[in-house]
Amino acid sequence: MAKFTIYFKDKVLQSHIFDSGIIRIGRDDTNDLVIDNLAVAPAHAVVVIKKDNCVIKQLNDDFPLIINNEKSKESLLQNNDKIIIGKHTVEYNTTESFTPATNNNHANKDVDHLNSRLENTVKIPDANLQVMDGQHIGRILPLKKSMTRFGHSGAGVVIIARRKEGYFISSLEGDADKITVNQHALADKTLNLNNNDIVVIDNTSMQFFLDK
Image (tube, rainbow, N blue to C red; front, side):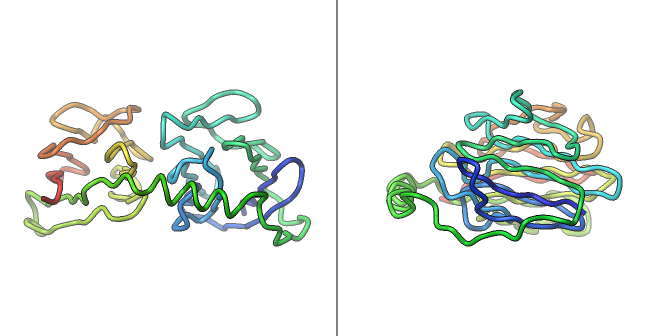
């Protein structure tokens, strides 16, 4: 099990335990761990929890991820690691015992909500991926969430993050060299997708396009 406890100025705000899977962290309320502060990206980081390890990956280059006081784009978490996200600290533990979370409201939460609403007035067009081959050829996959996951474990998994600057793709797990954008390996890069870009995951081609 993986436990994440969120602190603000040494005060516990919330705590969650997860058995496995993908845990999304960010300001947007669609995340699994929501940190309601403008210093946190709408889609800030993602954690992949498996039986034998727990890996955290940064999703937005403009919002750093700091593990034990060192900047990191991807890290294998160890028990008691401290993750700095914006002005908050997230402590990772592998034990089940923890202090019950309190339901304290964040300081200046109303102001943060107002600033967030103002920031969100800068809209970007909706976007989609269209499958170009295989049994699902022609299928349209909308990208309406702050983060959308594609692929299968073992065959390659990517995350497409929707930000006010555009849509950004990064590899989450698997052989990133077999995941390509316009025939170039994605590897450990985070790329801004452009209209009509071709993304290949597990030998399936998909075309990225913006709604008109």
